Length: 146
Image 1 (spheres, rainbow, N blue to C red):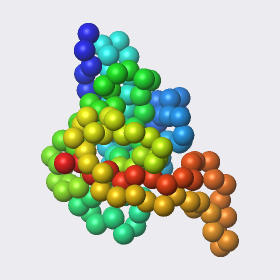
Image 2: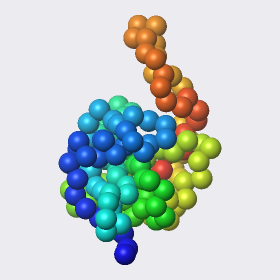
Image 3: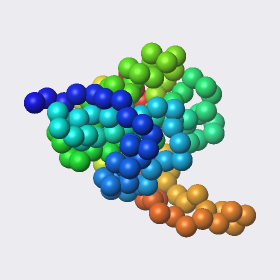
């Protein structure tokens, strides 16, 4: 049986991310989530929220803050394409996402996204607000839905 998109609650999506995402925990919140199933179970989720970078939070831009799958082929590209269709239908003019510079971004390319830049990695910790880094600190690639 083929893959099929499905609605999910935030709690369901975040539980899937906690179990399957290889580098991050679930995000703090979201605008919407989408799931994909193989006819028997959820095999992937995508979370779209406000841009993490304040200067990109212009109300017209949304960001894919998490995408996680269980490794099912084509699930991630199906989710990225669906997220852009949903965001456009909601009135967003731009949808962005980031990958680690070491990742190929094959699923984004397959969904028709393009690279628009590279962003320096680093820590969120500052002397005035110390934090424990639990995520990769390397450079990232900025992608945009087309």
